[in-house]
Image 1 (tube, rainbow, N blue to C red):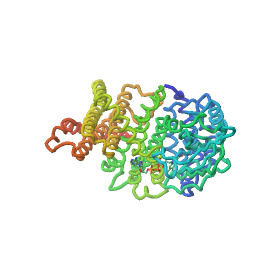
Image 2 (cartoon, helix red, strand yellow):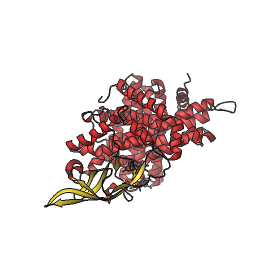
Image 3 (cartoon, rainbow, N blue to C red):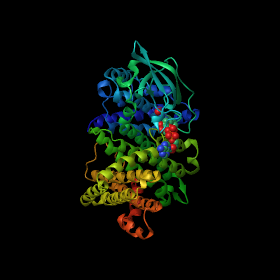
Image 4 (spheres, rainbow, N blue to C red):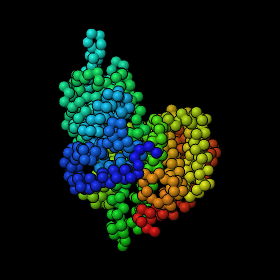
Length: 551
Ligand SMILES: Cc1cc2nc3c(=O)[nH]c(=O)nc-3n(C[C@H](O)[C@H](O)[C@H](O)COP(=O)(O)OP(=O)(O)OC[C@H]3O[C@@H](n4cnc5c(N)ncnc54)[C@H](O)[C@@H]3O)c2cc1C
């Protein structure tokens, strides 16, 4: 696998956690949060000569560490477990320099990536506008060419960017603007004439990050500021790294979700109610803790598979990045929400941190593409595969899982296969009935696809753990046996919800006459999926035991 060796990764994670323990203990985080202030000095220190955490995101040839996607996922998870706002400040530099990494000329790469590596300068990524969020193509910022003797010698940028992380503190920003040749990225330096930022937004969460609007009033830039030296490449450059950047935000969801559970779990072992600790009460653990741990681990399995694919040289992976982000951030958000409940009244107060984690993690389902845009991306991409393979794509994936289940019967692959077969049937009914004309059905497909694919990934991860084949750099929170129980719990939920919800919306779209419903139920494998729920309670008990360290 490309990237760092396990020892170097371990060392970097330890360095990050040690630094956070000293410089960002809970009371400091809570103070900054209450003051709604970015700890700029601390972020600069993180990117300074001693720590150099920004080197994680810079390629080796420009002075970085040469970390791969897997390393970056582990690092982003660890950062988010400390504070999603601080993590966002670091991520913004990476996002901001992304268009340069992807499409910059050799001179641009050497200048800007070198400055990030050597001087620790902070970047911001200026894509969103007041009128252009999910739909970036409607951007209004313009870059007007400046001509001398009939030749373009530079541009003048005018417009406004909204919600820009590091917007008020970055040393340089990448700005997406319309040129005569189409949307293009420009690098604009802090202090450039006509370039300014507004006061920081008063936000719901990630209050330790700076988010500000940028104003561009006829800002002059040279030709060398046009990334890649050619107009019209902006949207392609932005899309080229979605697989990678969305994986990072997925890791934020994972880190924050686990951070919330890691507060709820110890709390519940000490909180005595009705004669015993809450951790001993099934109605508590099986509702507020276990389901979230299971969903987070399903997302982790998908993140790890995607990271390995990226590190093996697979390109694009736009859809995979979207599935990872969607599943991990939704799981992280739900976990943090229930962590408040798990701490009762204490959870609702600032001092116990879970309410801050909940406010912080919420952004991960919004920035770098909202959950609804992820559902759309996933549905559209996999729809093409479904049509291209004449409906066989997910049946084939299910068959591979059935083979795995014969080798490793305990890893949940048999039930994950039921989920994938049901998904293939739902998609085929949707195709025949032309149901994706209804946007709601299309987006629900995005959700079911994500669940089914994560069930497959988790079963494969559980099987790999049982065979002692997990990558050395993997997270090892669960041992192989517990991971199998985690996988079985998730696969049951995935299969049942895909079949039930699929049936609901196929019937809901009037695509099946009443007399056709029994045949549809059979095609979806509902009987088998119901029977596969046997053992769910025992497996949920087993996951709870693993989480609480009970034998
Ligand atoms: C704290 C913070 C930091 C940010 N940092 C940055 C940054 O550094 N750089 C940057 O460029 N941007 C940044 N953003 C912007 C962020 O990426 C956008 O807010 C996000 O992409 C959504 O765009 P929007 O806010 O315009 O919402 P809209 O696009 O207006 O969406 C509103 C709602 O409608 C839904 N929706 C949108 N389109 C459709 C559709 N076609 N069909 C169905 N539903 C749809 C969305 O899912 C959402 O629920 C940041 C935002 C915040 C809040």
